Length: 246
Image 1: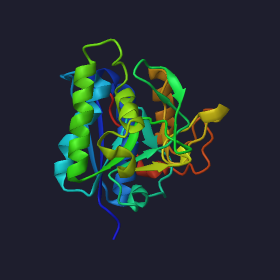
Image 2: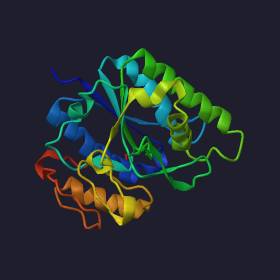
Image 3: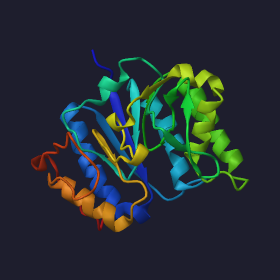
């Protein structure tokens, strides 16, 4: 039997224009595969909104699913035939794309490898297993974000995650399934490529571009972007466009 999955999103209200479109697509993907979908919207965050993912994942580990999948509010599923549960077959506690490049604590983009394998981490898409280790891991990640918030090197929450992996904090390398190539799980722009096979993550783009692209995808239209999408198959009849004014 495949593991059960809960997919969670969070955003603050100021980006609801495109986040609601992404959520409508992601909700329909989850309905297609009988995954639970949770979309939280609130503005009272302790640190920066990007750090809030750690708290949201930690909170929903108690919901009863085998895995919690985090997906950023600027990301959506574009291959409705692929199953998230297929990425959980290894039984590892953290499943995340392994990119050639990741970010350090200063926000600098660097090439990372461990034992010859690419291990640049992007915190926009990941799965965490409902386990005691995962609770300890998320608590440690959050405390690093809190401590780092007092110094000017804490701009990226994924910088703390990257450091934990590089220095094998909590034996994280043995608990992690690095999905390689990273394009299988998350959009990958390593080495002058731009490929997405499953989840389109629009980091580094404007609000207007995100709203336009998610609007096209919600209608089942292959978006007009430079990203290669070999498995785009969003079905327009499945999508109910949200009222973004709400």
